Each structure stands twice: as structure tokens, then as C-alpha cells.
Length: 179
Image (cartoon, rainbow, N blue to C red):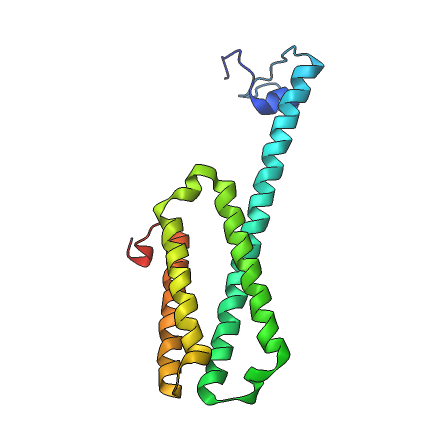
């Protein structure tokens, strides 16, 4: 049984009121007299926190989707670069990856800002540094490499860097998969 006279946020919001009032129930519902103004304050704080969480999750999912599309497009373009395919010169192939990568970067920055002080963690800095390395190696893989062998090796290294970045994000540790 609940013996405390303090009200929980769901109780103040009226959530679940009357659900546990049956005879023999191990939970006891208590009614707390609060003003409409107090209830509105609690309700608006609860709704704001809920919207902020939903926004964070939506941006995080967009970030993960953009990351997935980015590595898929990179792998295809790197393959075309190594094989010397004319498909690499198509306009859509040159434009779409930049759009996807811009969405990926904007979502990453937004998530870092939303995390506040938690966005200044070493794993976030590790992701940023590795992203710059990935971009540099990726340009060698797709256009700056002089031979197909050089471009192929650069592509494999870039994919390995990308996998390391994913490990950093999932484990929230600069040690990535080794944490």
C-alpha cells in the first residue's frame, strides 16, 4: 500500500485515477486537492518534456536513416569508381549523396545541441574527428585515387572508419566496439 501523502506527477495529472479502487486491491487511490493553476503547470511541464523526447527520437531516427543511406550510397559509388562505371557521372548520383550527408550532419549537430552538456562527451568529439577522416579517405576512394587499387583500398578503409563511428555511437565510448 502507498502510505505517503505526496502526489506523483501522474496522480496530479489525473492519469489512472480510479483504476485501483476495487475491493481487495493492493493499491490505494488518494485524491489530492490542487488548484487548476497548479494542475496546468504540471500538465504543461509533462507535455513539454514529452514533446522534447519525441523530437529527440524523431531526429535520432532521421540521423540513423541518413547514416544508413549514406554508407549505402558511398559503397555503390566506390564500387562504380573502382570499376570505372559511367554511372558515377550521372547528375543524380552526384547530388543525392550530398543531400543525404547534409541531413546526416544537421541531425548530428541538432542532437548534440539537444544533449546540452552531455553533447560535450569524448565520444561525440571522437565521432566528429572520425567523420573528418572518413570524408578525406572517402574522397580518395571515389575521385582522388589514381588507380582502381588505390580507390578500392581507400573505400575499404573508409567503410572500416564508418563501422568504427557506428560503434562509438552505439556504445557511447571512444573505444567503439572495444569498449
